[in-house]
Picture 1 (cartoon, rainbow, N blue to C red):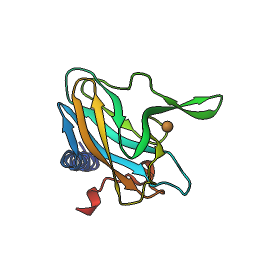
Picture 2 (tube, protein in one colour; picture 1 turned 135 degrees about the horizontal axis):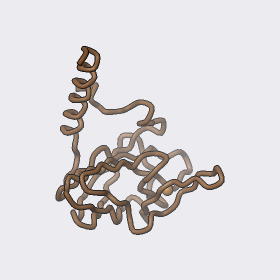
Picture 3 (cartoon, rainbow, N blue to C red; picture 1 turned 90 degrees about the vertical axis):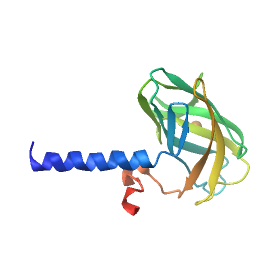
Picture 4 (cartoon, rainbow, N blue to C red; picture 1 turned 180 degrees about the horizontal axis):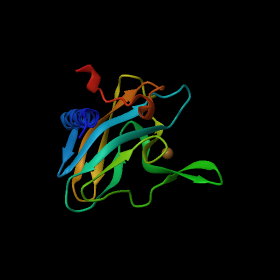
Length: 163
Ligand SMILES: [Cu+2]
């Protein structure tokens, strides 16, 4: 292999080590990482939450529900495009997490929908919630509130640069 390819593989290796270090929560064989919500815009009554779910088990699991005192109701949503218009839709039966697979909830796709927030999400705060998986069970988590401008697709915000 040439030097360039080696450097790329080394960088990927570091990246993997970084995210392994950063795993925030674990229940059974399911790891949940990088949970965040965007800070509320003025007057905004709903908020979307995102995370990475990594199922290391040999069997499929499913995120069946999310509950939180931060909102009146919490739903699992996806985004579908119909006739060129993006619409949010509730996911029937929860979000499937196949065996040995990582599922990302991210802007434009699957998300946790906090409906009728009891208080606006403020940058720097955390939002407590409970995730319920069909097989792995329940786990209490905290979503980090990120600035309204946060866009993980653009910034590739790993946190890895800071330590
Ligand atoms: Cu939604």
